[in-house]
Length: 263
Image 1: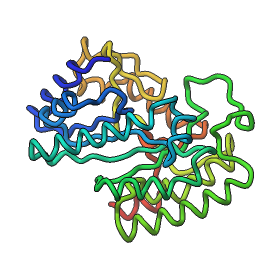
Image 2: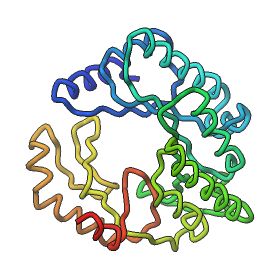
Image 3: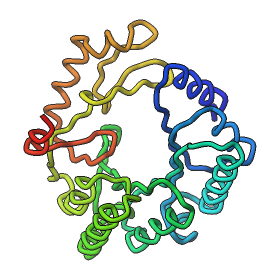
């Protein structure tokens, strides 16, 4: 929707020697756009693929999305080769009740294409932007006998990650995902680092973390001053008191014993 703005942002970030990472559904990436992305200096590009089978992916993401995603991968690979780029191309997959049987096959897709990695993220029903939450009626929430199947798949993904490294999801994510789906609203795990590890800036300049503020704008204040502001401190307190289930990659969680090994 804002391709030129995106390319400008990547180029600006590169001029500041920052790493750049874009996730795309790949629906409009043709030869021209692929070459523009590669020439921009982009470091990491993830393409969304939610099914090994076209039927599965399109049932989740919409008709025709599978072929377009695969085409975008091919176009990026050709552009990388043509322009001698070291851009890291990967897949990202949302784990749902519909695609558990195909997760290991999606890893094979990444291997066959020679991609950098594939990351698996659990379907998130319970966000701060959704008031009505019904786990049993959600077609994508993993439930019933598929919980045990997911445990087996996650164990296999852990072994693949140990042996080949192509699985990008953390060990914590892979070990915890079945419990997240099984416990639903009762899921609690680790310490949420949202607001402590990252900051989100909306297109209009507003800063927000998980829908909890701090209600400041980068057009009026520097990112540094916002980060250390009293308003952001209040936002972090709200996050510390948050009790909703969450296992999103952008909101990493840790255990005290894991943290103790790092310091």
